[in-house]
Length: 109
Image 1: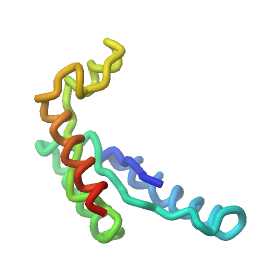
Image 2: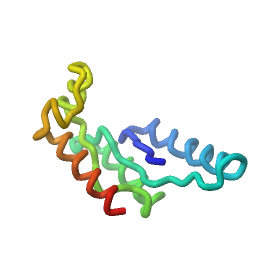
Image 3: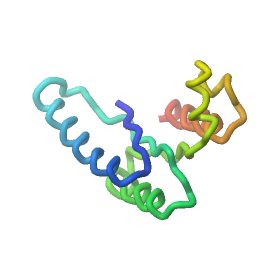
Image 4: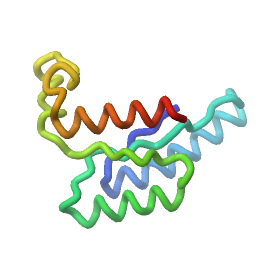
């Protein structure tokens, strides 16, 4: 399973709850369930909070957190309203490029 996490405080709180739930599911229902990776999303490098959340996630899950970070990007937000994936709507946007990099990183794993 891939876990996207917004670089916000409450998302960090939710990640702890989600990992606990994942452990329960592994124990009770599906021992094969694994966290394949954690993706930092909606990252805004202008904010200290985003930096701190990214640091905490990487410290807690160093092997699971992808290097690629998905930035906060208006083009990513606009694409669904036009019914298009970002790769068609604006394939040269920062968000589209970040998702392409994430795909390469995922395949490499």
